[in-house]
Amino acid sequence: MKIYVDADACPTVIKDILYRVSQRTYVEVILVANQPLSTPRIPTVSAIRVGSGFDVADDHIVSLVEKDDLVITADIPLAAEVIEKQAVALNPRGELYTTANIRARLNIRDFMDSMRSSGVQVGGGPPPLTQRDRMEFANALDSYIRKFLP
Image (cartoon, rainbow, N blue to C red; front, side, top):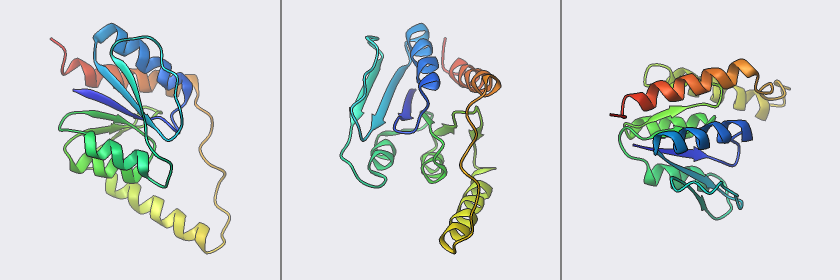
């Protein structure tokens, strides 16, 4: 099992949690981004820089992910592709995307996109991460990883 991170939009505090978990459990964490990333000197943490362009990082993650891998992302279409490959997606607020909830998330996302494209002002993005969000993320991450540790 590996953890892939959609790193361009992943909050630093979430990356820090992932680094600590990787160091403690020896689970490999791979950050994928369009921009240069600095990572700590932990043997199980690495970064892949992909070319610029729409969905290039997402496409690269999908090409690498395998069954039971974990992908950290808030990107709903990426999460859907990950689930199709029998992997798991977790957003930075601790919500696991599943076959049971991903279709509804895609429908809401598509609806919001069509509202924006028709000129309707829709929200200003997600609120900042709270301490509770961080805790829920860490708990969901630990719960998933425990399934694979001896």
